[in-house]
Amino acid sequence: MSETGRHADVPEENLPSERDGAHGDVATKGNPFADPGLPPHEHRIQDIDERAAKRSERTVALLFVVSMLATIGFIASYVIFPIDKIVYVWPLGHISALNFALGLTLGVALFCIGAGAVHWARTLMSDVEVAQERHPIEAEPEVKAKVMADFREGAAESGMGRRKLIRNTMFGALALVPLSGVVLLRDLGPLPEKKLRTTGWKKGVRLVNQSTNLPLRPEDIAVGSLTFAKPEGLEEHDEEFNQKIAKDALMLVRIQPQNIKDKQELEWSHEGIVAYSKICTHVGCPISLYEQQTHHVLCPCHQSTFDLSDGGRVIFGPAGHALPQLHITVKDGYLEAVSDFAEPVGPSFWERG
Image (cartoon, rainbow, N blue to C red):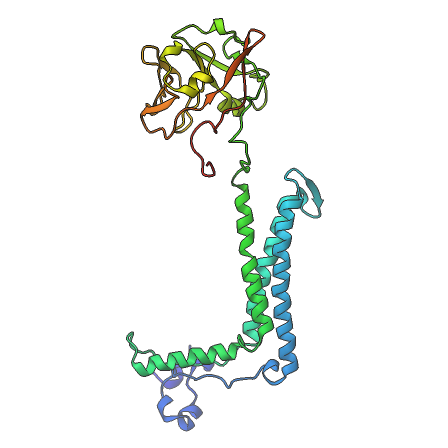
């Protein structure tokens, strides 16, 4: 086959040039895949004009400042806009003002940090391309020294120490933007405030039988019986009934006064009628089992056992503290509370104490 026939199907631009073969470098002669090397370095305008470099520095600083302002706007939006406020934004239509403000400000804050870093790298940091041959994984001492020297040189060329305006605004933007995530932790749930420390019981509130919905008299509580009560005015059809009864649920038993061992329990009772929170101090299960011979109540969830004749103390199980007792008295023939519980009801919580 002739040379012409052999190269008939190969594009002409892919064929090695005879001129290159004749006059090119000896090392690349006959090697179409030789390393062409790096093109000559072209200086940027910022490399030769300090005014242009200053403009780029101000641009980067402006982007970081805008990021800081956007982060502050994110936090302000979270406080200002109510969760149910709807606004019309073209072309999105009717959307949540809070979601729109949070998304917009957080997006601007993150974008400006990224844009500032990219602009800084492209206009002010060194852009000289350096090629280096592969070396063994374990570097020689000379190589390590060169790496550290290159690092120091790169740090100097980045302008981190010399361009303080960029450095300080970047640190400010990076320090503020995590606050957006901290603020979002607020959505994990409502702040408890003092809601866990107080209940619906207060001075003068009558005890109402939870089964009959009638105010309780002392004669309604028989020795050895277990009666469940709630505060007067709390009705099952109330919107927040389940939340309130989870703290207000009360159980009453009548014990012979001489069988009550705890002095305060005797003082807070009426003719042997003692009132304790129905909510177990382990994980908040309702207590419903009573043993009249021992005056013990048992939580059915994890078998925590409390002695109602001895201050409601724990005698068995994982519960951490005694049942809170409600101070009661009688007025106009009906049982009523003297005050709220002296301590929070239910299981322990992180800010208790």
